[in-house]
Image (cartoon, rainbow, N blue to C red; front, side, top):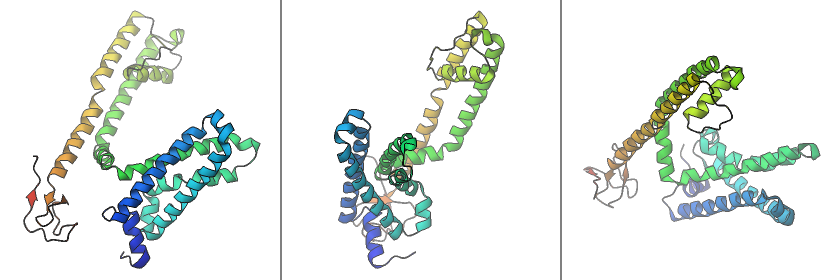
Length: 277
C-alpha cells in the first residue's frame, strides 16, 4: 500500500531508521522505555512506594500516555495495519500500555492483588527494545530457523525424562519420596539439568546408580541446543557477509538479488562481495 502525505512522513520517522528524524525518534523512544522500566522496578519497592507513590503514579500515567500516542501513530501510519497489530512488536506495544488501563477497571480492595500483577506486566516494555538491536534480531532469526531441531531435541529429552522417571518410581517408590511417576519425572528433570534441589534423593544402590547415569546424560546433552543455535548463528553471519556493496556510495546491506542501492538508488550492475579485512 502506497502512503502519501502525513502518513508517509510518519511512517518514515516511526518505522524507518535511514533519516535523521527516524534515528532521533528511535533514540528518544529507547531512553523513554528504559526510564519507564526503571520506574516500574523502583515502584515495586514498598518503602519507595510509600514515600513517592504519588510521583510514581503521575510518571506512570505520563509514560502510559506517551506509549499510547506512539501505538496509535504506529497503527495510523503502518502500511498494513492488520499485519502490524497482530505482529510480535504490535502485541508488545499493546502490552506496554494495556495494564494501566486494565487497572482502572479492576477497582476495589478485592482486586488489589490483581492490580499489582497488572503493574508488573508493564515490564514488557523492555521487549520494545528488541526491534532496535540488530544483534538481537540476528539471534531471533537464528532461533526461528532452528525451531524444528530445538523442538525435536526437547521432545527427546522429555522422552528420556519420562523413561528414567518411571524407572526411579519402580526402584525407589513412595518410601523414598518418589510418590508418583510425575514426581519422579520432576526429579529426573531437576537432575538432568544439573540443578539438583535435593528435596528428593535416591537411597538404594540401584537408584543411586541410575541417578549417576542420569547426571552423566545431562552433562552429555547440555551442549546440544547450544550447538544447534551456534550453527544457525554462523549461517546467518555468513549470509550477511555475502551482501553486496554499492560502487557509488560504498555502503553495504543489500540482498543478493537487489538491483538498486537502497541508500542512494544507484543501479547495482556489478556486485562487490564483502570480504573480511
